[in-house]
Length: 461
Image 1: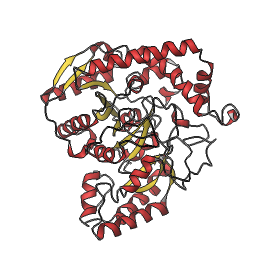
Image 2: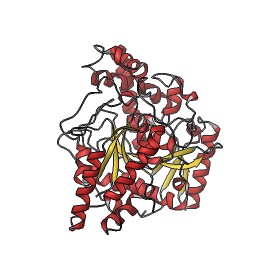
Image 3: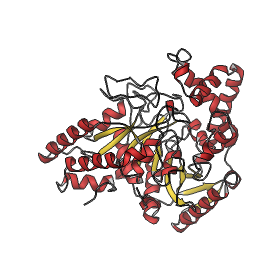
Image 4: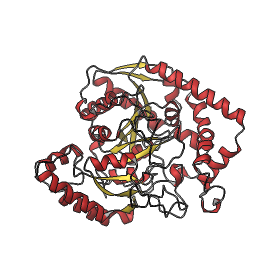
């Protein structure tokens, strides 16, 4: 029996009942990583000894009736900006290449307490911005080696799509969960800002950073969200709102109202527009009510995002930039320089636009349950097309146009596989919801995935 593409829920039941052991599954995953990842380059560190020890401990606990829940014994991976005790956490940089934390970040600790198995740390762009460090490998899209694998949680998307992990954590500051989820054909949830603790996570821009799951289905994301969400005294910005059992609330209590802004969506390329029309038809067939809306000005705040992010990034890197500037790649260095050069009055104008946009988005979401957007502003781009994806460029604003504004507003968004290009590479759609509506978004995602099979297709690796 091959196990690599089992849903977490299905795998969990087999582990709980003893039909599979975590050691068997973990060994199979490590062998698959050994066989496939030299070409895919999704892992920065494979924690083989830790994984086998985690698995053995899970088997022993489950065998004596100590099952901890749906993640117990399940092999997962973490984006390499989540601090892990005794394991290198470099955040995609060379300047922090020797950083070995002495404690787990909160989300890592919560997954560990749930009994999950840590397969390793997956690659990412430098500092979680738009480009991989020029001296480090770039993860390869398993659907097509010439196709962009997304940023910044590239290794997270590649590893889940290729069956090298059952789920991963990503971070999202301008689209970094949703872009690679769409590019690699997986499901990704960017929660409401503050819903998941950022303590022990290397920052790109703290007021924009979100941590969330990347899996192969909305149901699996719900299982991970239940574990990682919630108040954390180590992160005073985390929300104290009660955390529901997301996996127990995956049935819709009514048909959602879906908003579509025709003018906004008309800005995207023809293949993206065709995908959105197809999704709209699929949702209408489910009996969901689709209405036209007028969204606030996405493109202006998308253009502001680089500068606003850059200011916070400059602060985050204050100990190493400019003192070790020569060790930085050009994209991250350019973002920091942009932030350092920003005039204070220009900054406040952008902050005012951000506040106005957030208010307008909150008002829009009062009347709808879901705003429908693509997960990437350019349909499944090639690597060649993504050359020059740097702060302040027209290409950057095009690609992140449907994602970065959602980070600025702090709203939750679920990305789902939604079709394929003519060359067979994945496309993704975003369900954007009101603040703290993760449970409703996940339920909507489960309903959509019951009615479609986009998320069930696998790359040939």
